[in-house]
Every structure is written in C-alpha cells, then in structure tokens.
Image (tube, rainbow, N blue to C red; front, side):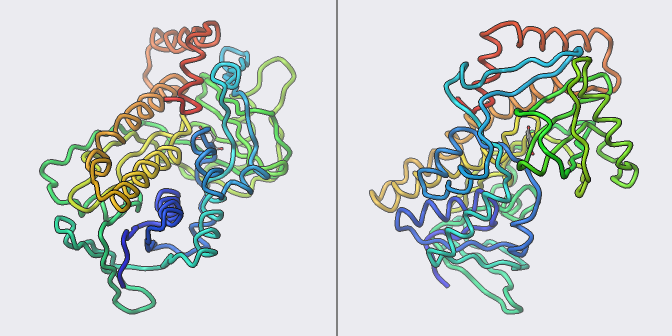
Length: 389
Ligand code: DHB
C-alpha cells in the first residue's frame, strides 16, 4: 500500500496528525499494535491546555470535549494545612479543560473513520526501512498477513517503548537525557460526586496527593507511592485513610469517598531524546520525550509536536519547501525543554523525597509560600500550567 505519511502509533500524537493532515488534503495511514478497544479505554492523563483545546476546536473534533469536559479557571495548592487558589484565568487570560486522553482518542478515531481514514489496529512485527532514502517504508503483520506501506515520510508516534526511536539511524549521535524519580503515583477512579470544583495539588509530609475529576459521577485521585509497590497492598480503607490524611485540613472540607473501580501505579520519569528526526523519520510525543505527570503536560506536548509537523508537511506539499520540517527538532525542543523544566519543578516542589534534610523540606515550603503570596510567582506557575510559553 502507498501513502504520503505513514504514522506508527494511534495515540493522541498519531491520530491528531492524521486528522490535521487530512484537513490539508494530505494522505496518511496509521498503524497500531493495540486494539481499538484498548486504545479507547487506556486510562491516561486528563488535562488539556488552552492551546490543545484550541486545536481540537479549530479542527472540528472539540464538540464532546466542550460538552463533557470540565472547563477549569483555577487550581488549588494545598500545603501547611491550608489551600490556596491559583486563578489561572485572572493571571493568564487562559484556562484548562479536564477531559481524559482516551476520550480525545475516541473523538479522533471517530473523525478519521468518518473521513474514510485508514487506521490498521492489532498489527505486529513493525519494522521501519529506508528512512535515510526518500522512499521509506514500514513493514508489519496485519490479520496474519505480511503488509507494507511505502510512504514519503514516517512518523514515530509509538510511545516510549515503541520501535521508532530505536530505528532512528545515527544512534551513535543520539543524546538521551533522563531522570527517574524515586516515587510513583497511585491512581484511582472512584464513583462519587466531585470533591472539589477545581484540581487540588497537595504537598504533605506523608507525600503528594492530587484531586482531579472525570465527570459529575466519576473522580480521579492520585497519591505518591513507592513505584515498586503493588496495588494489592492497598485496600480501599488504606487508600482512603491516606487520602484523608494528605488532603484534609481543619477547615471541614473532606474528600468524597465512593466505590473504587480502578487502581494503578504510574512510574515517573523525565526523558528527552534528540534529535527527533533523521532523514524521513520524525518522532512525536512520548517516543521522544516523557514528563512526570505533576505538570499535566504529557498529552499537550504530543499535540505541540504534531502542530509543528502538520505545518511542516503543509509547507512541504503545498509549497515544495522543507524548511519547517528541517527545523523540527530545534523548534520542538524549545517547548519540550520548558515543559520538562515545569514538570520537574512541580514534581520537586510537591513530593516528599525520602532522605530530604529538614533544611530541604523548609525550602519546599518557602517556595510554595512564595508562589501563593507573590502575584509574579503565581503568574509564572499559571503561565506554565496553561501552556502559555
Ligand atoms: C490529571 C493528571 C495529571 O497528571 C495532573 O497533573 C492533573 C490531573 C488527571 O488525570 O486528571
């Protein structure tokens, strides 16, 4: 089979790129190792920056997000027994929407299928060939048969563990930057009404905790844990007592309990791999970079990459110029490093580090106190959070 852009991976990066290319009359085929049911059900992050909301709206796939997503104009920081509101709208003129990644995936899959877009799922043995030539190809097995896509370009949007990054030529020139954190997040989904109108990021001696939401009847909560711990070690009672301890102060506010119907542990790392392109292969999203979830940037960074690639391909196919594609890594990394910095900052600020000295603990408190008492510092946090950079 032949197409213009072969896209490996049907996550937010791959699907959004395929959708944006289609709107410009550029053909693509997406291949994915998982099933449609899997990609549409995998629980991932949930916060969309203003720029992500804008591109979904402008490209015609924002309707469900506007209807069932929750628009938030602020977030709260909880520490030293008090909650403090950061007014995102007042400080930046922008907002965020809490709308889970798998819902974005559903919207994009529906849009691609409605436009007769090709998404081949449950493929295996994916291999990339000829990426240094102008006739690259992807081979794979699909429904028991060997298949091949010849394309002008290949996009590696197959996540941190995908084959694309490892298939980049020039591995000797590859630079990977990485930090692995000594903690993870325990995430739960709960049947209950929201505990709070806005997200609460809590720093506590027992560890970080976060109150988020999914819908009027389903809530998403997280708390810092040992990344090697196992969900079976956490009874519902133990989870609730930890959340109550970390989130509640003496003001009478309480976390709403409910039936916990999903539990999982997320490991945390910061990771950037450069360059993000070689010949006709371009990496997008988690295949090239990972952020710890504290800054809520993961999916937004993938969308940032895709916006650049969509513009690059538009220039290439409409004007016959490759300047934007040639500058992709350099351009993308500017935004990525800033998001890496913010995600690392939020992680460092809000988590409890085993072995931290009392001095270091006081420094965390002082930094939080600065943020909530200085409009300038609160603005810096808000700008980063809404993605205004
Ligand atoms: C959610 C995830 C995040 O990483 C975050 O910072 C805020 C909210 C969520 O899943 O809702």
